[in-house]
Image (cartoon, rainbow, N blue to C red; front, side, top):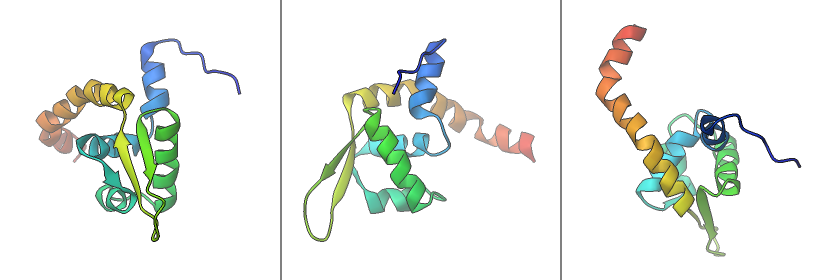
Length: 110
C-alpha cells in the first residue's frame, strides 16, 4: 500500500477525521474511555457496522486505543491516545463555533 500524499495540512487532517461519524466518536472518547455499547448509544443514528468500521479506522490512524479485556462476556474499551488528544484540541474551536452559531445555522436552513 502506498502512502498518501497531501497537498496541505487540511488534507492530512481530513484523511484522519473525515466523514460523518468520526468527529462524534472523537468527542465522546476524548471525554473519557468508552465501551463499545456506550458509544453505540451516544452516537445517535450510527449503525453498529459503521461504528465498528469508524473505530477501526481511528485505531489504525492512532487516534484511539482499543483495549480488549479478554473476558466473557466480551468487554472492549476505547480511549484517546496522545495523538488523538492533539486532534481533539485542534477541532475544539470548531465545536465552540458550532455551539455559538447553532441557532443561526438552524435559522438559515429553515
